[in-house]
Length: 138
Image (cartoon, rainbow, N blue to C red; front, side):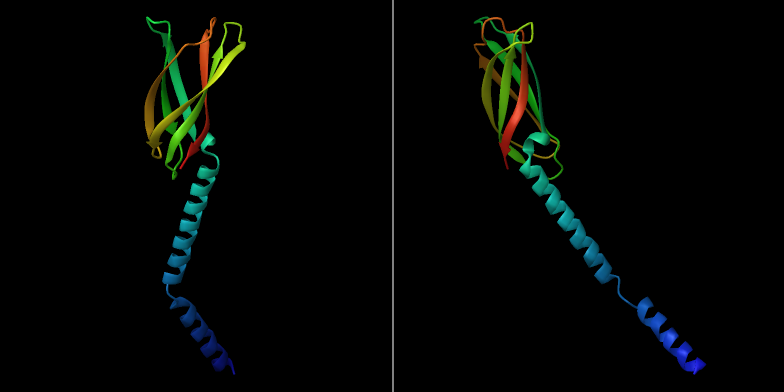
């Protein structure tokens, strides 16, 4: 009886030791792909959380305000294009004078940045300009 028990115990260890790691590798690869897809879906649902915009402004000789900006894609998986940027024109006291939209027709890959330049006739009394990404396509 004891020998039968040890024989079955030995066979149990043998079968568990001989199982292939392919099934484990496949599960890990599938889990990685699912995570990667879900990350890309999250990035595509809220592009404004993964795209940043910075810029500067100055007046030219014609009295126009020249805005030079840089769009940075901080996403890990998603490539964005047709990025909608909202510009806010403020006075010296911080009063919002005007809002404007600028569409950047460029594709920005993950980790990449693109520069843009626009000219506006800003409202009288404009002291500073702020920018914010509103939306983007993928």
